[in-house]
Length: 356
Image (cartoon, rainbow, N blue to C red; front, side):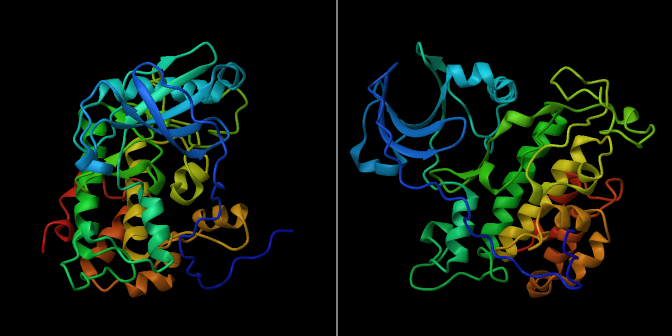
């Protein structure tokens, strides 16, 4: 029997519970104009390397900001043949990245292959991802001076999160990128999280991780019977061509999942992305997640199916946010009813993001 939820929410700092140990992988030889420099991390499906485009002129003084540096993910072709889900996500990511052009989206280079592996090239972001930054903050490491601190003095903090001006700028950049996907490209991202938000060499945000993108359905199709949407055995998964059906696939990461995803309703993608943006905002402000539980995933999902607004109001980290405008934006992005939730465009116009 699952343990019952605590009557009052508990603050769980963002910590790295799944750190990959230092790799002993052999660095690949130069290939297709790239020299591999360093193994960065391993995942079940691939290895990630820092590499350098040897066709570009080297600038030693630029070090980490060297524009010739790239990230290369290496996937074994045999693995991709066996794992259809991973293969489709990778195909979708590469296709989407070719279609979108925005200053706050992460560009991909042209992929290439050897006899045994597929190589996916993406922009190198010297600042890492937001998850790494927030883990560092949760360990009480100092915020880098590039994050807006004046020399010799600490910047104003948003509760226990990032500096206030940094939070506002990152959120403006994230929301503008998601608005572009929704309005200009007709796409929903569905995988917005700290790990898919990267900090480039100019300390600007870049949204990547396009493997779960889908075409947005027309608003009229998400109005039918909502019962049993994901229970039907023949319910199709979303594809990039299913533009005349409501989205049904429950995907993304648990801490960022909107209630309609957890409850198995067909959904419009804009609201799912807006909810995830609200979770990111909460994390940047407080260094913890708005919805978490010590009792496992089932308890977390029950929480999201319950009184979300009451939980949020009782959250100790919410009470620590000093700016009432920030609290207002969080509450409106985390409305459990997607029809009452702020759209990304409405969030982008909120005064919190623009008033100094």
